Length: 129
Image 1: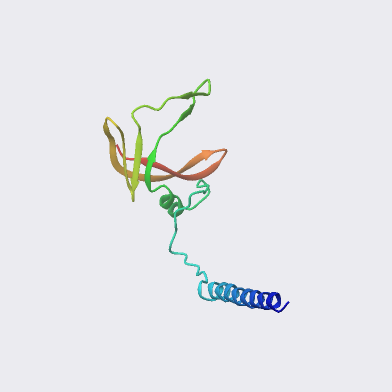
Image 2: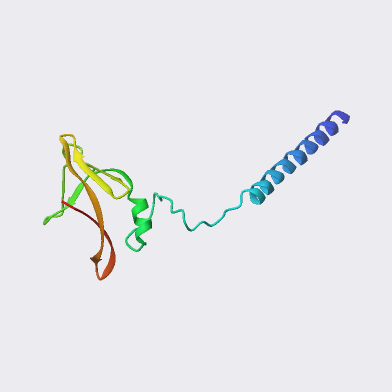
């Protein structure tokens, strides 16, 4: 009986210590890991609707290299194959577009405010020829 009670009291003491450590780590995260709101930094998001956002949010979220994977639409609503791996690379206010055969667009982006659909105005990415 003495062996079993010693094991139980040791386990109980170990649980108490581990629970204390977990509570302390959680408290430290909340105390020292607080979030600060910084309205000057706009970060990219992987899941965002852009048509109703300000221009700066749109500009930050379209930066990078984009690949055309699928074309859907047309009169019959069909799916059309993509050939030669077309891509578009946006850096700042500069856009480069091309495919495996070469670059066919290398110019400056011009952001214009226009009507998207159903009367909603948004910023549209256009470019100079």
